[in-house]
Length: 338
Ligand SMILES: [Fe+2]
Image (cartoon, rainbow, N blue to C red; front, side, top):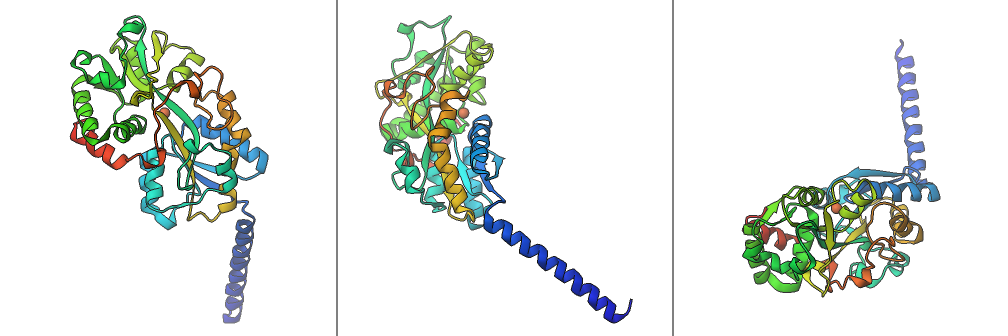
């Protein structure tokens, strides 16, 4: 090849490369490359939301799988370079962490307007997308109504030693402890946790704890309600001996936890990300909760009719956006639970 020919070849290659760049830019400007969701919610629920949203809007969604705390920490590490456009959680403490780091963009007003105030952050930086209630799942072959704990706090009593379980390492249980901390303060929470350490059998996951109740290993477990409903809707094999006790009376054990959704400030697809959040909190997204098999509560509109209505749970009043996960982990670690 002559020098001139070689130069021509290089020029042609550069031209080809630059036209590729141009077309990539156009695709991105149209937003058709879609959005990335860091999803810590249950996979089947997120999939149902994503499929409904994409079908209606044509916007593609890539879902990445992880846990509440794991993704919150990852987002804080990634900062402005995060590939995430949207963050969905099971519980609100992880939302509070990311909000505290200043990583969220304000949620569109239209979205906030369709969510009741008690199910979204006071600062408008994230919104509730679903809700779940704390329950005491108990062995109905062993315990009768009169033998059930009146309050979750009763489980600290030595009479309950070795008789109940929980999944202390999970974000679900840590949200419950966060609520206890907000309601009763540091001292009361710390002594309850120390007593819990003496009494509890720890399991890895709520469904494992429920299975242990069903198998007669323990008499009850503090978990969320939907694990029982989900199992009942399938074969019921892991919950046939199990019934749910709702503490009500604004007890810490009647805590309703808010699953959160937020748009990252660093997202280059603000419009599409906000549209996704609006869709899941709107009629179509909330109908997935009502008609699907997640058995989580809708936060706007009607919930699945099989559930005890949210308004009948008599849950304690909690400010979801200030649940303190750092302090919670600190107290649980000091009690030897983590
Ligand atoms: Fe869960």
